[in-house]
Amino acid sequence: MMSRLCLMLIFQGSLQLQCDRNEVNGIIGGVLVVICQYQTSRYLFSKKYWCLGESRSTCEILMDTDGYVRAELNNRFKIQDAKRRGLFIQMADLQISDTGVYWVGIDEIYSDIMYRINIRVTEVAVSEPRVWSLSPPEMSCWGKPLTVRCTSERGTQIKYGWFRTTGSQPVSMAGSSDLQLHCGILTEDGRYFCTAGNSLGNQNSQDVTVQLLRPAEADCIYILGIRGDNLYDCSERLRTTTAAPFQPTDTTDGDKSSLTTYGLNVTRTDGGLPLWYLVLRWLLFAALLMVLCLVPRLFRVLNCPPRTKTSISVPPRSRKHSNIY
Image (tube, rainbow, N blue to C red; front, side):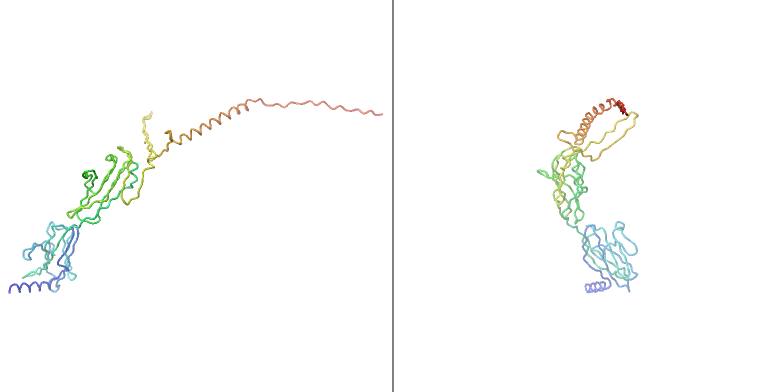
């Protein structure tokens, strides 16, 4: 008799309060919303609440439509009575501890109207992480530092790490999603990979290779290799040298001047001298030869005495006297 009465109460309650689902799955960090409809003709102004617990009689009220919300859930859980549009329950920033049995309740004098909902919060498996350089990889030819980032498109509560492949066991390089490469840590060729994982498992990225062409503390030359990226080499840097920045010196009056040359590439010959210097030297030599050839002629022209006009005396013509007889 009692069991039959309970079934009747449950059936009657289900007619007075209905929700869109009684099994809800969520993921860590996600949001879920439960929408319920109730008899507005009877319970329009009744208090509604969200309750956690296996039993409807002993469950703990987490929030209600009168404004009460348990302190630690204030920023994550919300309940809104939209009257004839329905009752909305929202749970945000889901955590594993949110898994459990919940009840939507309507305050009633003799017996509350309640609807049971099972909520299960799980993690999402991590997808294979993708790696890329935040800066143009070609900067490595000039000894500039590079940052290689690793991210997974899917997964919850992901933890990242970078490792360097060695002969026996990988060596940890970073405990974050970013790998910093610079001349100070590069002493030889290396192979690196990123690991992304959570409680469901780990995934490794493709290998990232570093080919060290010239080791140095601050001005090394190396090539970064990532599968799928455009291949490049540092042949231009290897053929040229970078002019050293000008070091300012004190002048006589104590003033200092500074001049810095950035990225000036000077092409040098086999003898070690700049090409422009050799060209300029030959031009000056040719000019000197021309001057040496022209100057003597100029002096000869200047030292010659001026020519004077000579007068030529012409004997006067003698008149012929004709004898007139």
